[in-house]
Image (tube, rainbow, N blue to C red; front, side, top):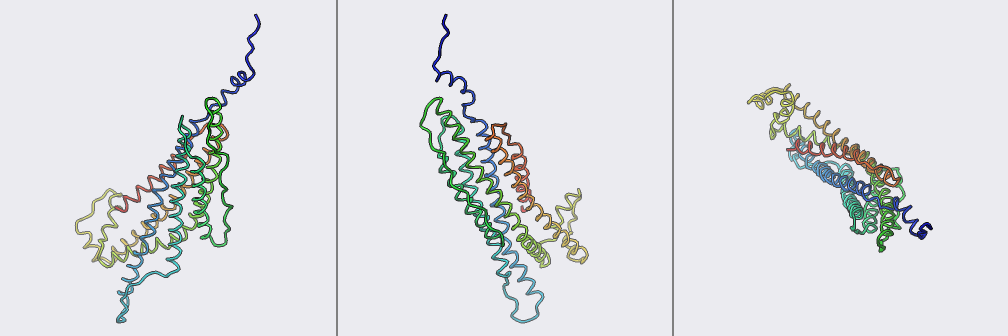
Length: 331
C-alpha cells in the first residue's frame, strides 16, 4: 500500500500549528497588570495633587497669624502668603503631576486595547491607543525634564509601527494576531519604561519640594493649635489609641494650662508630619517597583517565558494600603 502523501502545505501546518497559536493568555496577563497599575496610579495622582494644592492655604494662615501675633506695629496685621519662587516650584510640580494623570489615562487605554485584542474575536485600535499613550507620556516626560535643572531630556519615544489590523481568517489570522500581540507589547513597553523613568525624576523633585511643603503644613497645624482654633487633644488621640490607652475628658484644658504639655503636643505634631512625608515618598517607591514588575512581565511575554503579575500586584497592594491609610488619617 502506497503511503499517503499529504501536500507540503498541510505538513507545514501540522508542524508549526503548535507555535502559531496566539499567546492570548500571557498577553492578557500583561494587559490586565497594566490596566490595574494605571488605575491605582490615577488614584494616587489625585490624592497627591490635592495634598500639594492645600499647602498654599495652610501657609497663608500660618504666616498671617504669626505676623499679627508677633507684631506691635499698627496696620501690620494683613494677609500674608509665601514667596513667589516657592509657589512657582510647587505649582510646576502640580502641573507635572496633572500631566502624569493624562499620561496614565492614555496608557490605561493602550493596555485596555491590548486586553481586548488578547481575547478571541475582540478587535481594538491598538495602534491608535499606543500612539495616544506615546504622545501623552512624551509630554509628561518633557515637563519633568524641564523641572530638572541641568538635566537633558531623554529622547522622545517614536510612534509605533507594524500594528496594522488583520483581515485574514483561520490559521493565518491566528498567526497574524500573535505578531500583533507581540508588536503591541513591544510598542507599549517603551512607553511604560519612559513613564517609569520620568516618575523616578518626579520623585526626586517631589522630595525637594515636599520637604518645604510638609514643613509649611506642620507650621500651619502648630498655628491652629496655638491659636486655640483646633484642640491639641486631636494630635494626641492616635498616639493614645496606639498605646492602648484612653484620654481623659479634660485633656484640652490640661494642654492649655501646661506649657510643657503643649510643647510635647507640638513635638508629636512635627513627628507625625515627618512620618507623613516618609509615607508619601514610599508611595513613589512602590509605584516605581510596580512599573518595574510590569516591564518584567512585558519582557517575559515577548521572550515566550511564563508571565507572572505577582510582583506588580504586591507593590500595588502596598500603594493602595498607603493611599487608604492617608485617607483615614485625613478623616
